[in-house]
Amino acid sequence: MNKLRMRRGGFTLIELMIVVAIIGILAAIAIPNFLRFQLRSRAGEGKTNLAAIRTSEEGYAAEFSTYVPAAVLPRSTGALNGDKFNWPTPAPGFDTVGWAPEGEVYYNYSINAGPAGCPAAGTPCVRYAAEAISDIDADGTLNYWGYIKPDAAGVATSSFSGNCVTGGVYNAVSTMQDLLETVGPCAVGFGQRIF
Image (tube, rainbow, N blue to C red; front, side, top):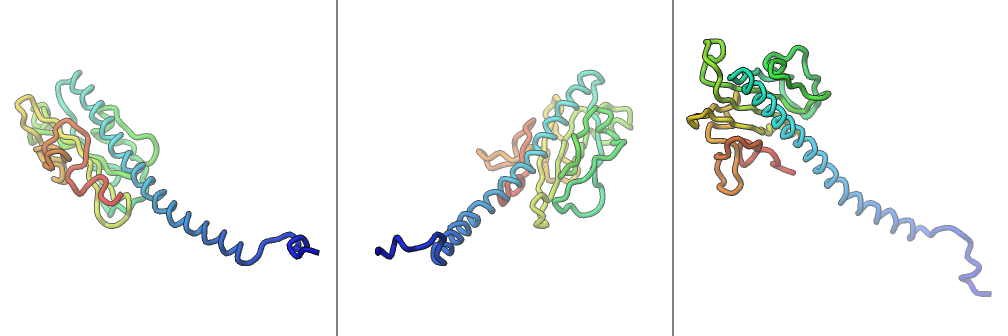
């Protein structure tokens, strides 16, 4: 009788080891890609919310002829570590322009309006800089996204942190911080630093 036909069902140890090795190789490739995809998705929150803040500010300015500053929220103190935070209620400034995120957020958001002292000094705010800050990859290095809106004369205001400068956000073509009225990383190292 042929020995191959006498073999009973089941797998040999070598066959099982080959399958385990293939699964390990696939996991080694897939897991880092999945983590990078998650980080890109989290970074998308900052860009999307800045665009929504811009829309809210422009709508408010169309009606009241001034932009509204807003302090850093939801977390004004403590280290950012990649965790989500609840959006506070009330949220001064953000409530005025009618913007609030849906659910918890990874980023801190702020709006710096100018000229200095507006609107408390009775002067309308004619320019602003919106910013989103987070440490979404929890490596201790913060990511900064921004939007810079200059006034009619082209004068701009920098963000609260100072990372989004009056020249604008980072422009990959010119490799300078010169893009105004565009949501983007505040400098070359921000936004998609490791992913």
